[in-house]
Image (cartoon, rainbow, N blue to C red; front, side, top):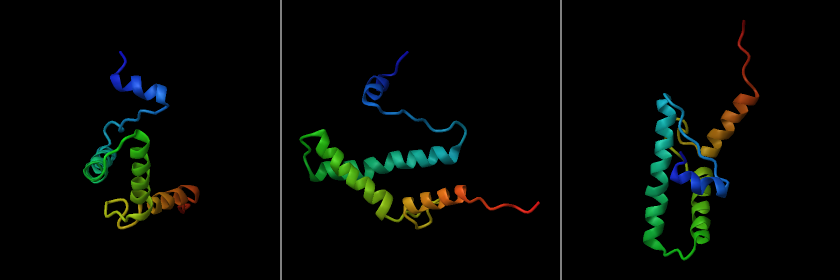
Amino acid sequence: MIHMCEIFLEPNGIEHRTCKVGNTTYQWLCGKVNRTVPDEFFRTAFRKKFYDSLQALQKDLDKWLHHYNYERPHRGYHNKGRKPIETFEMGKKRRENPIKEAA
């Protein structure tokens, strides 16, 4: 049986992802992001501006996401005051250059 959201996602080339089962930390992080976007962007944006097109809304959302990921420091467990992009880059470097443990 096809879920209603799949009727929209597939033709629009959108990948549907779900949280890993049994990983409460990952589920918490996904839930946090899913709360932050409506709380900090949508509710504020819809109070300040009337959007006459989806493209106008997408443009403002893209600006907000850039600010959220590249300019705004986060105090969460993983970021510890860093911007998300800084945390991402640090993890990427760690994976590329793992520390070799002594035998």
